[in-house]
Length: 115
Length: 108
Image (cartoon, rainbow over all chains, first blue to last red; front, side):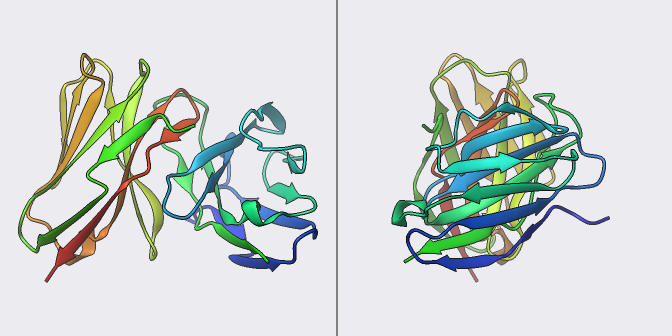
């Protein structure tokens, strides 16, 4: 079946622009996660949804970052007034439940470059 | 902040050789997972080992866990060119905390 998809795959933004990154999780997956991966580093947790509820947003680096999942499926990560330090790959993952033994399935990521 | 740390940072081996990489973590865990990432397939789950397990196998992969030392190792046996990738350990309590990864290059 279809995996997690993300769009766009690549995004170039000028500093100060707003961007919106989309994630389509695997159908029926309750849990959805966003991670940020800087060059040469492992992914770092940003935020977590269970259905439409955002249960953890402790990893969002600033109030310029906002995520939503209004109908409990597709999610959007929005970054306002982008800065150069926001350049990274943004990964979305989904899983059936929030259980700690549940495998998270990752999308291919969106590579954001802020000039 | 990242929970795990992989060692070495990079590893280059000949096809057919074994590759071993280690992971150390800081706090108590429920489970530890290993992931692989390459440009072709993104981040892929390899294996999960629970805190009460000491060793687990999956195909050519062998993972060990020593909770007293807060460390884990991943062994890839009989490596292939397709194993060229970055490997990450991750601890989980619903959200994953990854290390910086080990980059493995398998030379033909």
